[in-house]
Image (cartoon, rainbow, N blue to C red; front, side, top):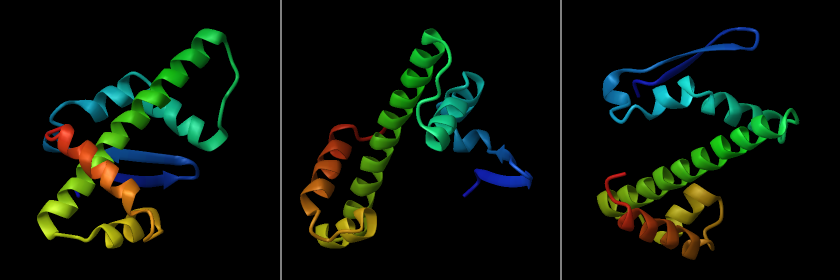
Length: 118
């Protein structure tokens, strides 16, 4: 993995990546537009009240990031199933912690097939 997150001190980190890690510029854009900051703040504290406009932007960033990560997760399920032939049961256990959630994993797989290449 070329992307690295290194704790530098206290509550600080340094993120490094190569152009090959981010061919679409999504990492760079998430940082430059404060999307990543909004997502991490929402992760840590939930809804952070400020001004209406700032809250709407933070919500938009968080929702968009969540959708992108859902697509990436679906791509992983597709890859694991098609590359390794991993069973639905094993995927459900490994990814969701519950082998009985096979239908959820199948929905992710189907989503990954629809959005192949994202």
